[in-house]
Length: 584
Image (cartoon, rainbow, N blue to C red; front, side, top):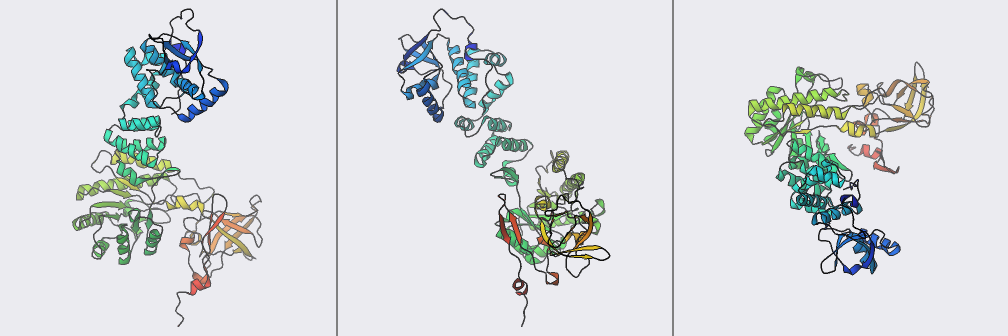
């Protein structure tokens, strides 16, 4: 905890006039001084004592100790315990003192303020000292705060720490958690919940900001178990917990080889073969059904899982976008009527945990679209409960959040989406039997898209009815421009500052006329050997590749933070391509 430096010195506490000679500096034997009975400090940082000892060895005790004379002639310390301890360690026989006579209350005040000013008390010791002063003086918090030179609010906030359990206070005293952690814990009103959160703070070594975030969510009704499911701690802080959305057997195997637990995997496929359901069930992954007929077929071949999910297609009730198209024309998902039938069927077969999923857009840049999708799904959750009595445990809002592929595209405001969904949740779910409802999203494009690049070299330039620039990559390496007419920005290495004075079609070498990365793209004057970089291919690059015309898959490199490069996938060879062909 950062010290609050008081506005007044120790002497400001004592307004009464001094008698002649009272302030006279004396040197007395260090061993003659007895420890203070009013010392609020229980813990002394030995490293800091060691540093003070070295300073005193060189410079002596510059600031006198304050003591009082007892009836037997001995001296009792009032203020200066650290200096006394360090002086003894330094081997000083005599130390400077000022002898004064104070009431018990003034002694405690002096010890408290001296500790706050000279060396930070831990927050609990400070709170205990202030509380003791209030008890002794019988004055108001406002009055004492004024005499200590701090605000009443600061004093009150410090005193609040005394409401913590002894277990938590002990960790504050020892410095394992700070006053900021403690105040965040206090914002959780239930002592049971507070103690659970305290355990998480210690186990995950949460920062104050992270603790405040957890506490805020708990005040909204989240349990510690839910928070542990939704968040993971890494060296950088708290990040949203990530799993994998798989759509095939091979992707399930990839998840397995990445050591992703099945509980963090969802199989979202369509026209699904039984082998994929069986693999997902074996892994403990969540099966996201796409059609009513799949349920009976699947459960006939596997043990009924504890949890399942159903994919919802609202049809004409909701619009799509250019990439996915109109929902009513999409092959994906259940109608609302089939959702109800499917949930009742699964419930009767023994499923206990239900989720709902939807995916209606791809690369959408308008934030309101995703908020409206959440509103739609929250309405559906309530309707499911009314019609079937089933409380849906989670909703997956799907993905579709876009990235600015084109320089003129806007960045999607993720915070605006989150705030809008949060507002809808409070209005539609909070305070109902559905709460708490876990929310998942699928935003791999946002996470990976901007961090992938396709690097290709110019090997041919053709000038006929148009100017064509042939490169050594093809749409087999990046399909998006050919499929969707998608834009990917292109830069020319070493020519970034040259004027874009030429208009080209950038083409591959496949026997398809749509094998083009750009059409009528304005670029600098290009020459053979120029290196082109296509941006934002991390989400739909290598994963969408293929081998048409016998084109071999390119290698993949990872650029590390230290600018070193690591090979993470070797280039495909002719032997790789031929290996599956039976030549006999």
